[in-house]
Image 1 (cartoon, rainbow, N blue to C red):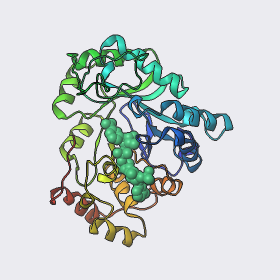
Image 2 (image 1 turned 180 degrees about the vertical axis):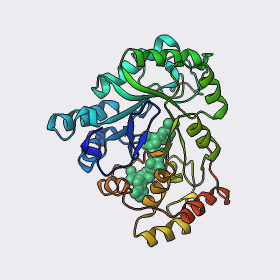
Image 3 (image 1 turned 135 degrees about the vertical axis):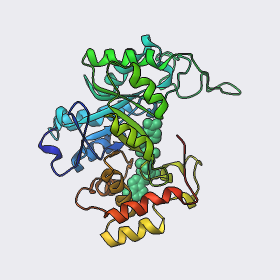
Image 4 (image 1 turned 90 degrees about the vertical axis):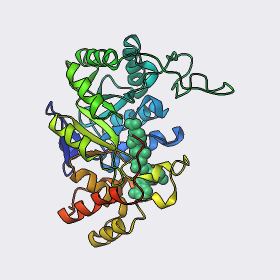
Length: 317
Ligand SMILES: NC(=O)c1ccc[n+]([C@@H]2O[C@H](COP(=O)([O-])OP(=O)(O)OC[C@H]3O[C@@H](n4cnc5c(N)ncnc54)[C@H](OP(=O)(O)O)[C@@H]3O)[C@@H](O)[C@H]2O)c1
């Protein structure tokens, strides 16, 4: 990472590589707007993008990245691109083809980080049959079901390790793992996971898991860092769960002359995690990146952490 990220705080991985602490989350960005959002984000100064096969917009993400690279807005080595292995590709013979499909779609020859999206192995769906495959084996069935596949995580991990050896990915990691699964993986891995990506915000502070990761040289990325916000449209959260509307967050925001979203993102960055807020709004792209030039006091950090014990804790882990 070079001059392009001057002014942005970085997270240092165990290998010494550095990830910009604020990235753009790409889940739920419509295909039609993704390429433009990615280009706009690069113009704003984003250098870290959080993609996944499952988001269904890697082709368009690739178009945006390619356009920005062609214009000379940024160099490949100044970008940090993460993607994720979907649940239906956990068998060892499916891992590399899944990564190669993401690379083709993103128009890249390597990823900075490849994550196992969930510790859940599902029945294989060939890429030619349906892509991205989603959760159901047959979504058109009268009663669609999620079918498990008995693949031990170490089989998947060995295939992930081979991607590092082949130079196709720089770092590998996992999402949505708890302490026990991480311990089991660490006990067996030749290449330890560099990153854990988990839901994290003041209603789900993940204190113990974060401490365990930092003690084990695993960096942490917070997904859904604004809390319930992105779950409203999925009917998975209700208005009273909004952190952006919480009095404490709003009061701290006023004191710092910042927005509530900036306070939540600053809280994440100040805890030593990276955050990957999603937005397709140009003003919010800028707002969400502008969290490196102010600091929350220790008292403010602690008060925000205490929201976890207030009546509306969320846990989708
Ligand atoms: N590994 C996993 O299993 C996993 C799971 C979930 C998410 N993720 C990753 O984490 C990323 C972020 O999580 P998320 O998308 O669930 O939630 P989020 O980034 O916390 O929240 C996104 C929502 O907040 C709104 N928003 C963004 N910036 C705002 C601002 N400054 N003020 C007010 N509203 C704002 C967005 O609307 P607008 O677009 O209209 O601005 C959107 O509705 C995802 O995109 C994905 O990359 C990973």
